[in-house]
Image (cartoon, rainbow, N blue to C red; front, side, top):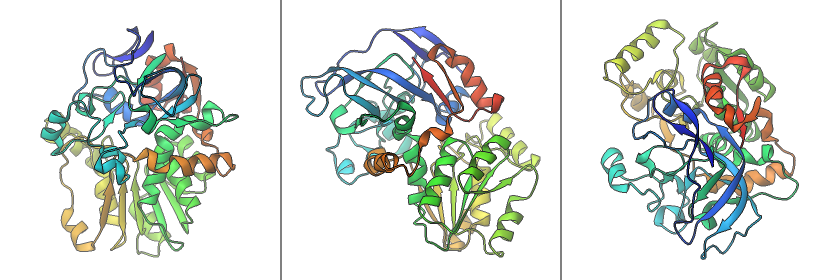
Length: 389
């Protein structure tokens, strides 16, 4: 089969690789009908996440048709259309029973390594380094879906791939980011980053009834999409984020702040950006935490910081004293996708939201290597790429 494979920093290739096979009686094999490039994939593409090996299949946003089932699969059958959450869950461990699916205790096949790096294992993830199990990703013609009965989400008849695809990651991620904020009708919610996750965080905060939602970015097309979703926007290249947020909140600051950027944050002031880039180059920090610093500074005392943006390692110059003295609450983590999918699927079916709004580019899988560059560099007004094997 064909797949997009990692061969080093900024080197993704359209390769021929062996077809997947059933490895466990609870597995299924799906024929991929749609997959996508995620902002988290760019952290791999740019070489910020450890644990990738040459030839690894990329991608964790995918869906398709079941073509083979393991002998212990009870819920799925050949011909079912499914969208696959990027977090691999067993559905049986203590964390899964609590709904903490992204920290499933059983699905990371490299648990010993993860324990050493993170202190305790996370769940296995598709297409996302050997620290999270080394599972083949979904930017391919076929994928082995592990523990499929527990995780795969059946797609109703009549729902298009474009409506369903993002239930596997960015829609639940944006929703969880807003849910972690415990939004009240009097709240201002500030969202840093107007990429795909930021767009869903904006719309989720609006649906949850925030008084006002503010989105911060510097790309005109992304800011326009956020405004279409109900946000007030701030272009950080054109004005001070802190001053504008204070003006919008009578000097009090937003009650809730969402970091939808993560480890590759850009700073509006060149000195901040230069500082983090120099520290990265000297291996004195791994991630650029400008957004975290800004959120801590501007958030209203006793507020909540929600962090869906991915971080991989060590941060520098975090004003933790300010966070402690302001009494801020931090909530973060990979998404507990299956906690949210039933409700979000219903909202799509009832017409409350059509997730396909975020798609700007649809191309064949063979165009994937070039689209990684287009997406990373935000060329051609690119916000979200869907690939068709």
